[in-house]
Picture (tube, rainbow, N blue to C red):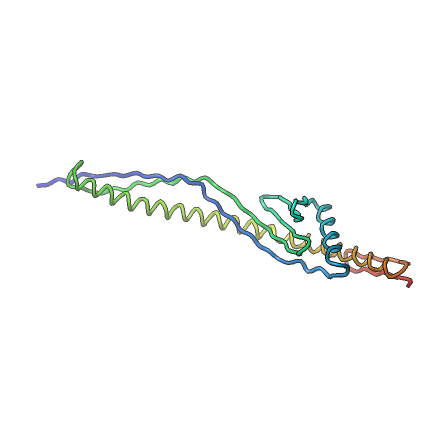
Amino acid sequence: MSRSYRICVRESVSRVIRAEDRVSTHLEILEVLPPEEMAGLLGDELERRGFQRQGDGTLVRRAKGAMVTVDPAAGTVTATVETAEAVKVEAAKDGRALDLAGRNAERVRESLRHELRGDLEKKVGEKELSLQTKVSDELEAQLGALREELDQTVNRVTAEALKRKAARLGRIKEITEDAQAGSLTIVVEV
């Protein structure tokens, strides 16, 4: 009568997983003034709102794990959230072999290791997917406030551009501005 031996194999995987999500949009700014002037007004307003001017002319702000980059010349906005996390997954599998140290035992061990590696890769993949979902949810949560802030910025830039344009047309007699309603009335004497 032959006897079988229990073979146990343990494996672990340690990795740093990364996840990133980004969204880009284009600001709809009326070209009341020449494009370079409008870009200058947009850049100035963004700096007042905490953006830092970069060497390439873009403006960047980092907050709550997100990075918002605005190119005032092109009118593009890109919001990015990225994160990294160290993960360690472990697993064990049991099998049976006719011998404890011979060819049969080695084949069983290799087969178990191969299965374990597949299982571990699957677990790491699940953790990557979970992290990616978390990053995407975080970006989506921040987009609402960002959208509102960018709308306010565009309104301020447009209002300032209209004031400058009116001043070039003649003498401004009266300016009435209602930020809540989003209305601006400029009376110009030509």
